Length: 253
Image (cartoon, rainbow, N blue to C red; front, side, top):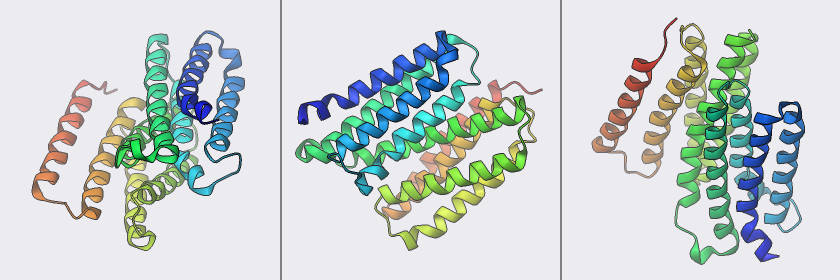
């Protein structure tokens, strides 16, 4: 059984990539393949929790579920098949790496790299923010979905994602609650303002993800009691470089 658990992260990554590949060439099967991956992830949760739902393990699996769902939504708005394959390959790889570290954390802790899941979860939260916000902007721009409904969606996602991030950082809930509220509110307001910008859905998502990276990174160092001027400067420089690159190469219509 341990051998099956050991190889399950790689099987998961392969299955997700193959399903995305089939979505490109057999789009009529897209919802069947989406359901298939979700069922497999549920079975993987059971496998990692020894055939019973373990609340802690279920929380750790929030990342691969959200990443797959967010990539799937983003996938719907991509037209270039090579871009689709690139996104599929990257997301499958990231899920594999995350589950691999979760296996070591759960079953071979002596080989687990300290803070690996925490670091991965933070970076994946930023990536999830990009894919979900880009997809919601896509629904607004291309399908004219009600803005109010999308605002509810981005608010619900941010509350869940921020709660999860602070949980995995092992912070006290009541200590982190003001940060969860402020982060969620700022993301909500930023999303609303950006619905008025004449940019593409991916550019809007990238801007929102960069702002989330800046806020989340500095809050993390605050809880680690290592928030110094050098840390703030580094985050601002990286964030500004990415923002300027995105804005400078964006198409304004």
